Length: 133
Image (tube, rainbow, N blue to C red):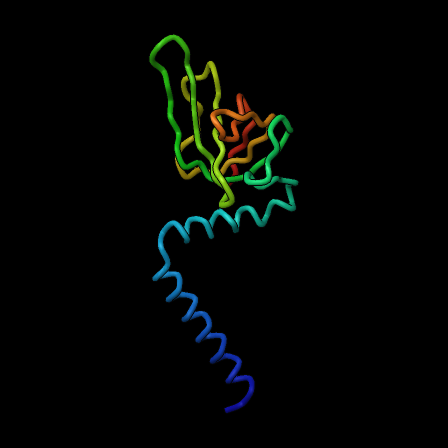
């Protein structure tokens, strides 16, 4: 067998093994790997991994929304969301807003703002946000 043919065979078998690993991996592991691919692109936009945030600092993060809650009842309107980038999860809170178009679970978001500590979780209040496709 020629070296070129052997190289093709090796590449094919490696892709096949990677496919089997992907099929047998737990869904949480696949989700984290997908988020990590997003995080690896942070060099272009000067983003900070959520796990590396410092309270009271200004930071820009990129991740996927895992939970969005629109609170329209009661005295104060509020939108709460959780964002994850594969390294950790942060909470986003917009006060005085009953709904924000485009915010839904699974959406990729770039968020910038001051990092706060709320019950031991990194939290951004009224952050700047941008939907990322």
